[in-house]
Length: 348
Length: 247
Image (cartoon, rainbow over all chains, first blue to last red; front, side, top):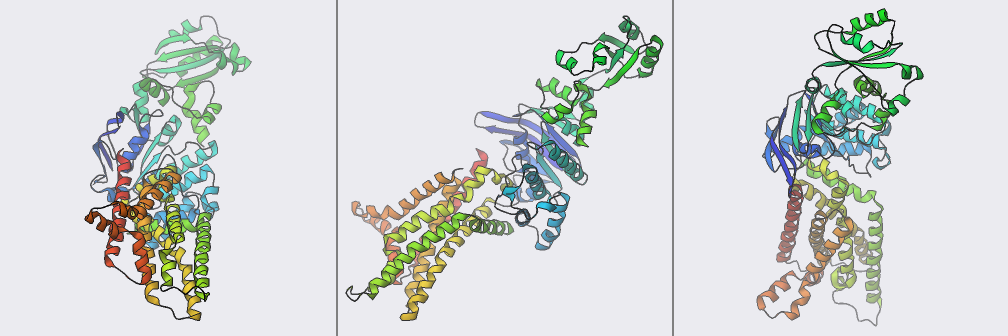
């Protein structure tokens, strides 16, 4: 659906994006991940035809963006990073304007506008003046304008930036619905968003494509063996040795927490022993661990299988901490490792 | 084509949604109404000796006519593109399947449309005069042709200025400077000795143009001048919009 070859963009001396190539298949949901300033927006702008690449080419559904810009742009619905709308217009007026701009016939527009207003949950505000709307609603109006003409490809640049947690959830749900019928390309620096929405991820750093794959593939790349974390009450002093001897266990270490993490634990957990087990993926050691604990009289307060999160991949590849939005952080336990399960809760 | 229409509709409506339009309209009608009443009272004064071509006074013979034109057109055009650049709405506009030319023309015709709308109420003066005397339609029609022609040039210059900057104020100042140049260039006539330059200056002297239009003379060379100058500015606007992407 989208083919990008060797995209490079220079601003004077500065190279914002260098030699990025990728393709997006029909119906795929592709995430572009990268720290702020990595070149995500520049890449997106080259895909949507707002910025011409300094070198390289883009085709959308077979239409070269340089040679057939109008045809190529017609295939794309685009939500820019800063959703700038005309403040003096009403929502329905704005959509009517966009429909005409997209070259829709009157009949098509008359059918599409109410449908889009419905699907973007804008019914309550469709007669309101845009400048009076909250950021979340404006984002939805921008999204409505992007999908109005029924584009086959939808390109969203940081669709949830600057929204409150409730709005983020609403927008994500909307995006997930939209992704069922369309090819979708989303740029973001928020990791849970990518994990939830995208089937394939590109990681961009300092203008270069540094990793590509499904979230699972990327996680596997980041980590060879799996890790099991235990929190044990009434542990015997030889707990580490006993566990290390179990079948399939490659390593066992007692884990210490930092002060902040300890402060968040309950008194009971604070008194407990925390152990981290490395094991080969061939054998699941959980049952053995449980039975051993019972035999030894240990009380298992917690047993968590730690999967490498995209965050680990990200940190390893870019050497930077990823941005996790404050709301997600607040809901996250001290264990960053449970990010997947936890962010699901935030999203639903 | 539908893209051009969409832009035209939106821009024309945007004028009426903003208070600025009504401020301009009021200012415009007060000045023109005052000039008209001066002309009428002059014609009514038996000591004044009358005017051979009174319409000349309404169309361009007074400084008020030019002040209004030189101040109002930059205000009408300053917002057109600079505001899109400032707010970033240009991104949603230029990624829609429309060409730069369609966007520029849509905005241009909207501004020109509003400018013509500003002049419409002055037709009431014709009706008022028509009640007490016979109306000579020739100079009236040619006068309005001149007004639209010069307005077309001024608005094209203004929209070009608007495409060069994100700031509406700067856009207004740039277009004001261009308009002053277009309007006043012929004033250096007396400093020039070269015959060819003198001829060219005479050809592009807007004051002479309006004075002749006010007498009922429609010289097609002047219309050609308006059309080509407007086209040049619009071409430059479209190019400058394209060039923005490459920087």
